[in-house]
Length: 328
Image (cartoon, rainbow, N blue to C red; front, side):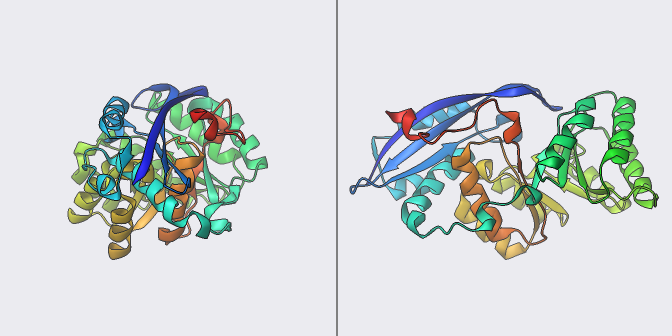
């Protein structure tokens, strides 16, 4: 039996996070605490993103409120699949309860900035932000597209690829915000860039160019262009991940562990099928980030940077008293 408690938190972004889905100002999440009979404590974090296919924050709160103050592993492993962020948080806390003293402090759990992909702000702000991030050690960058007029974005893209050092890698994330014609234009532009000997910046992939409903169109595009395509929103949860694999996707899968669902089942799926996975953030705190990085350290197969370079988007980092101070 574990004593269970939870707290709702909110963190302010330093600047509005603009995607094709929405404008995001505040990141809310639920921090949960498990305590065993010896007083040992483990933490979990529920950080849903409903427009990615997870439960809403309200649904997660309702679930936490209806749980008893004492819970068992059976309670945790019976969390339904329509609460994937809750599955991740509770199961991660349970794993920490059993392995906390055995977790080594080594680089796969604490990647250097060179092993992170740093998220750039959308639009022209990226032309300035990348330099600061480069000085901090980042070598892979993600830039949001499908936010502004495509002609304007292509102009900024041209300037950005000319400005970035030769060893940089760039990921373009459309968040499903393009139509087929615009996706083709981006892919053609990236393919042409690959042929230009004067520009050696590597376009690693275009992420989720079309909406989730357009799976077979994305599959077709992936077979027509040299530039790689990665699925993101299409594979947000473990159920979606399995569905896309069954439909024939063998490209890159962007996996956000904190909303994917059960960590143990996610591990089984990735190991069974040997997929090319990029593990990415949902703007979680250090609690869920550490749990997600453990999974990434176990399952990454293609030496791809993990998408957790997002701390510069928050006004305040967690201090040494956190998260204990939430429950005092």
